[in-house]
Length: 219
Image 1 (cartoon, helix red, strand yellow):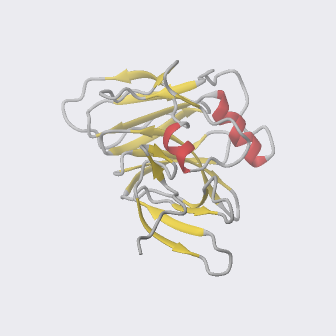
Image 2: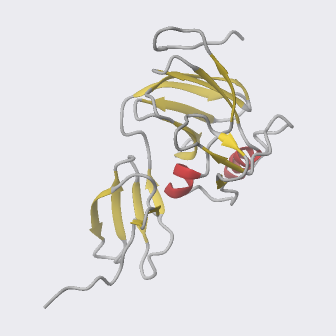
């Protein structure tokens, strides 16, 4: 007889339950009945039996070459950029390294980045433009919650409630129409990382006629 669907996880009607990456491999754990799947964004996701509701990120990371790294001043937060066109933020502890945000999801391969202050991040890539981002307060609160101390403080973090990227644009814009930034204390899951942890872009620097390979700042 015909088989009928009893359960569906992942992308449903265009909603990125597992993030923007398509699922391409999955297994059911014999001991617990949980479903573990890998997606094209480099993330290993787990749905826990019996309700299989909110997915848990087991491991995440870039799925193409990492081009540059920089530390966020005053905190054990590492930023990375990659040829997979994303910039990612990591909280680094002695026994673990957790992806805490995805400040930039871009249309060009990213080559270099630098942190100018606890709240200012600058990136460059194949588009010949340097982009400047300001971290939102939600990001600082999430980092502080993760470490259990006020690692990031001050009034330089922007009050961005929602950040989005226009369908035909490359600039992260704060305001209405964007995904509401994840503000719970836990580590963000893949849908939140992909859609609601962007940093708003505050400036662009033009001038180069060819693709950028590296940027640096003086102390």
